[in-house]
Image (cartoon, rainbow, N blue to C red; front, top):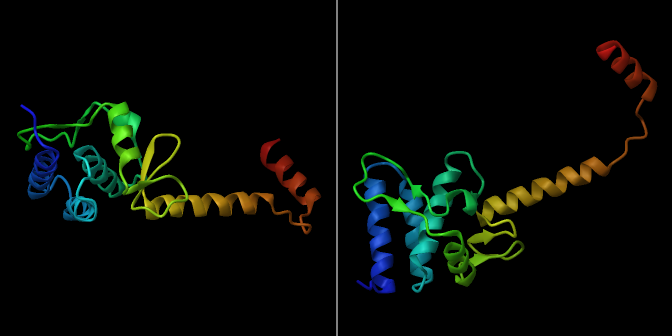
Length: 161
């Protein structure tokens, strides 16, 4: 049976809504997908699935979705769900994301960012991570001329010798 693209999107949104109703995902995870579909009517179900998963992972303390760790595997594994959702194969997922106008590369201003290591970010999290990394590099290059090297040497010797 060949399901139209719109039918596939409705199907994925229906499955995500079931997950939301069972409190497996949060309303914001589903609303992100609805927002993306509203803005990009031709968005694929693979991109919607990735968007819901990257939002879901954020609430679990992760800043990105490492696609290779989830590709081809069951998602949102929970006994309460009748039809288990499975992530697409990595190549299929990457192609869908790269072809989607809602997904950009690092430095683009798009809702989702796909980096060169096949990690998908929500833009704000990619921006925060990049800003933090730049600041850490900047601080690591700063030199403080007021460092008392002999005091540091004495501390090291007393602590580790």
